Length: 190
Image 1 (cartoon, rainbow, N blue to C red):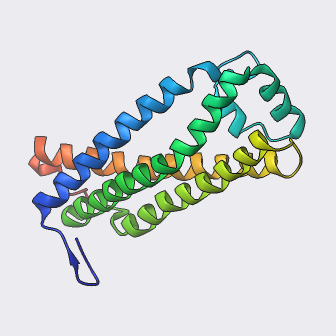
Image 2: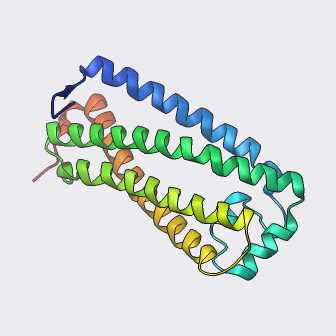
Image 3: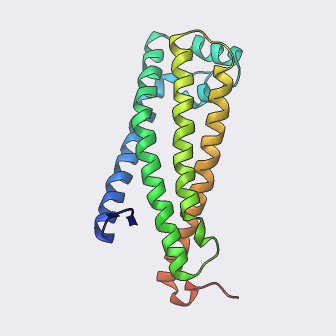
């Protein structure tokens, strides 16, 4: 990876990626574990229900379903999510960049989307940050417009960007796997 004087050998890049991937997996497990008390009938998906509430009434209904301990978990989750968004964005951006490299090397369609995909993952992280700020303001202030609406729009954009980017990453993985298993499949027909 070369960018403005920054270079990592492929073997070191693999180590960085694997460390980031391990951190992403561990943080995902930790966030899900911490978020268990947030699952209520009003918030069947825990913190995700709160992120996507979309209106003051729905956000208030979710807050009312959480006791003081659950609200502390929600606040802690928002703080920990700041670290998480940096880690997952870096992990997935490297995965997207690597998928692009594989697709370029093998001449497959969509090979030039690597930078856009990487930027999309960082865009998702930026949306996540704005969402977190809106949710913290709701948790520690009053539930009022436009905070739940901002959080919901940012969450929807975040999830959309993550989905699109991960489809691209899995496309690159599938092409790489097919190339290893079937060397003749390395290049599309046409």
